[in-house]
Amino acid sequence: MWATSRGGERDGYCGVVEKRIGNTVINTCPNTVTHSRMPILREEERVLDQHFLHFSYVQGFTPTQSDSALFIQFTTPPHHSFHSLHRWYTHIHSYGTERLKFPGPKHTSLSFTFNNTKVTIMVNKTTDETGVAAMDSLSLAEKDSGQGQGQGQAEDIVDPWNVQASSNKGIDYDKLIDRFGSSRIDEALLERFERITGHKPHHFLRRGIFFSHRDMHSILNRVEAGKSFFLYTGRGPSSDAMHLGHLIPFIMTKWLQDVFDVPLVIQLTDDEKYLWKDLKLNNCHKLAYENAKDIIAVGFDVNKTFIFSDLDFVSGEFYKNVLMVQKHVTFNQVKGIFGFDESSNIGKIMFPAVQAAPSFSSSFPLIFGAKKDIPCLIPCAIDQDPYFRMTRDVAPRIGFQKPALIHSTFFPALQGAGSKMSSSDETSSIFLTDTPNQVKKKINKYAFSGGRDTLEEHRELGGDCEVDVSYMYLSFFLEDEARLQEIRQEYSSGRMLTGELKAELIKVLQQIVKDHQERRKAVTDEVVKQFMTPRPLNFTGKS
Image (cartoon, rainbow, N blue to C red; front, side, top):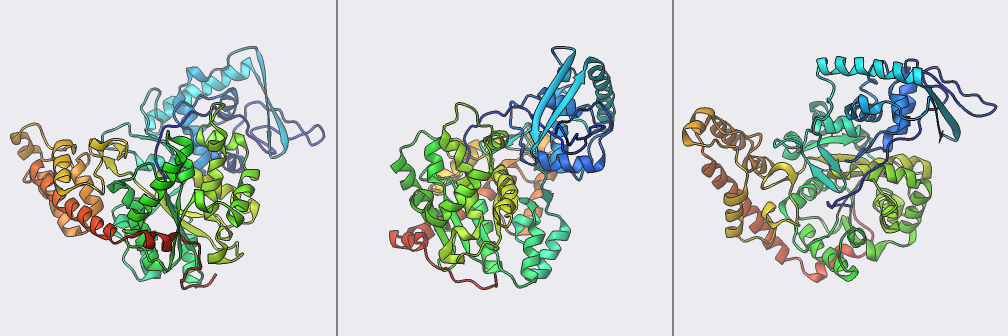
C-alpha cells in the first residue's frame, strides 16, 4: 500500500523464547519450558530480536501477560544493536509500571509456540511482585539517564495507514530508526556511494530527506562486483491528481536509475485502493492510468521502466510468487505487523503479499527470465517499511534475495510537520494540477510559519526554520545548497521576514509545477501503453 488511510490496532506480543531465556531450559522430552526470573543473556537477546522483527506496535497496543512476564526478566535494557527487541522493550516500558502488574490468580501459566517448540511461562505472585519492584527501579534509572520515555509521554504514530507527529517539529526520525530497526544513512555510506558511482549524492541524501536504509551496502557491493540489481517503487492511486509529496520517491528513483543504469518496476496498487477506500473498482483502475501519466512525466526512461496496474498484471509468475508469500506468512504475523482484526476484509489480509511480490526478480520473466537471485532496491517513505520487513523475513524461506530499502522522511502538510501532505485535504496540499495563482494562495494562506508574533520580536529572535513549512519545502525542492543556507541564515537572524521566505518558496514551486504540467501534456495514451506493456527492458550490468 503506497498511500495513507486509517488502520487498526494490534494485540500484544504472545510468545517468545527458544532454548533458554533467563533460567529457562527446554525439556526435550515433553517439549515444554518453564522459567522464573534471571537476567537475559546476550545470545538470548539475539533470538528475541529475530522474533520481534515483525511487530510494529501501532497506536492502541496493549501489553499482554506474556509481554509483562518477559519484560521483568530484563535487569537492564537490551543491547542497542538488537533493534527489534529494543523497540519492543521501549514500548512495553513506556506503557507504565503499574499497569504491567499481573492480574488474576496467584499462579499464572502462559503458553505459546515458538519455532515449533511449546513454551510455558509459570508466573507466581512472589515472582510478579519481585519483577515489578525491579521494573520500578529500572524505570527511575532510565528516566534519570534520559533514556526512558516516561508514562503518558506522547509518541509519534507511524504505520502504513496513519502518520501523526507528537510535536510541531515533526516526526522524531532518530527514534523511528530505533523503533523500526533500520540503519541511518551516514557520511560513511554517502562517501562510499560517491566513490563507487562517481556521482555526488543527490541533495535528498545529503540533506537527510532520505535518511534510513536496509542493506544499501549490499547493493553497493553488487555494483563493485559488476553485478546488477533493479529498482522497485509504487503508488496507491486514490485520486486523479498527485501532490508534491508524491513526487519525492519518484524523483529519487529516477536519479538512482540514471546513476546505476538499472531496470525499474513501478507498481500501481489499484486493487489495494479498492479494498481500503470507498471507490468503485473501475474507478480505481482509471485512477491508476491517470497517475501513471504523472509518474511518466517525472522523466523515466521507457527502455528501462515497466509500470503496471495490479488489476492488469497479477497473474502467471507474479501470482505464483504472491501465493508463496501467502503460504509462508501467517495471519498472526500480518495481524501483528498491520493491525488487522476480525473485521478486516480478507482482501486486506492477503494484500501485503501482492506488494511483496515485485521485490522478487522472477515476478517479471520478460525482464529477468527465471532468475531468482537479482535483488531490488526500494526507495519509499518509511511508513511503507512494515510491508518490506515482512518481505525481507519471508524472502530467504522461499528462495529469494531480501529487498534493500532507502527510506524518506514525510513531506509535511501545509499546516505543519505534525502530519504529512494528504490528497484528501486540499488545504494541506499543493497539487500537480494547481495553477500558479493557486500555489501562491495556498502558501500565503496555509503554510505554517516559524516567524514571531510581531515584527520587533522577529527582528530580535529570528524565525524558527525547524517548524517553518516554507523552509521545509525549500529543503526538498531548492537544489542550490548555497542559496538554501543563505535563506536559513537570513530567516533565523530575523533579517528575512515570513512574507519574503514564502515569496522565495512560491517562485520555486510555481516553476516545478509548471514544468511538470508541460511534461505531462506530452504523455499521450500511446506513451502510457508503451510503459505499461510487459516487455524486455534494456539495461547494463550482469546478473
